[in-house]
Image (cartoon, rainbow, N blue to C red; front, side, top):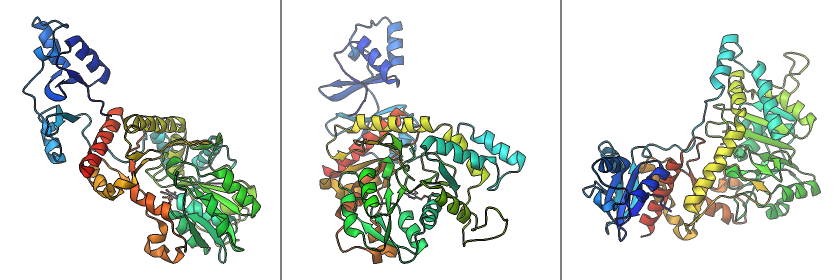
Length: 478
Ligand SMILES: Cc1ncc(COP(=O)(O)O)c(C=O)c1O
């Protein structure tokens, strides 16, 4: 899986040069029976040609035999300090075999996800400041709603302060509250259960599917009671829930469906953007999301009447026709013009962002697919994954090493994230723990690692993450 540029010591210089040309680093490691015996740069070859060496001469004539290397297991601190002196460092095992390489281009802190603000963000923000429209009134709010609506093909769209307020507002606008029950997955971010509790309704926690981490639709019907009003389907890590099955059950039992798309902007189910099947859909624009406005969210409804009520509730329950006349106990869940300005600029580049996420996933796949100790995220039969966070699952047999692997990666300056904890195990939610076991959720919570998935990640950074991940696993199991 390691794409290190290496060549046998009996090869000729021309072959070494063409290999170096492909990888772009300009360095080649020379091997003899798998052992590292030398290394050379394209500069070394150039100088030797000037000194009369020919391209058909063997690489061992030119290679540098007195190279600097570090043993497998060297601390990050030592590697970093060595990189101040050496541009390329091979990492070798006890047998003298080349297992990895580091270089001063790839060896830096790799964040989990970084927003990318190199479109019109600055220009639109300046416009807000220069015109004085900085709060929640101003043209960017409706522009953001419009551009978002067009992208997701959903007409009734409302910008809100974050993904959690979007969920809370969705539940309230659908008329769900005290005495009602809402079915939710156990394996998700806590905002989902919090929003249900805020509304006064009772969360009914069920397990997720064994193969894709989203709500297990085969458990929904068993959990429906006279009090059930809605199901929240969370589209996790960029993958969609099985909306066909969920919608069928919801229709049969006259339940609302809320799609939590916080992690799934750019995900398509049966060719339609997620959020368009259910009665309501919610999105988050937190700093780590596919588009970001710092904090921010979007709420969409199938029906206009729900949108109208949510609009009122978003703004303290104030009448849309009579100012300072409050018809409901509402909230301040408005998004500012400043945040919306950033949102518009981000949405102008959404196709590029999603394309990049999918390319990053493909690159990860190419390095990791041969490795049988990992399950990788994928597209589904009807699902085009947006790979918000490329989340791998360790094989059950090595799941006990998950936290050790995370710690190894962290020490290598790679920011990774463990998967969510099961809701039913955390103190505020223990009282909602169901009688039946939630074994898939528990298993995913122990086995998952989300890898860096920033839009502007380079191929070399992805390779470095993969090298370190595989190295960490080998170190744990050997
Ligand atoms: C699945 C899910 N739902 C809801 C939210 C809440 O969004 P926010 O942080 O914008 O309130 C998040 C945020 O991380 C999320 O991942």
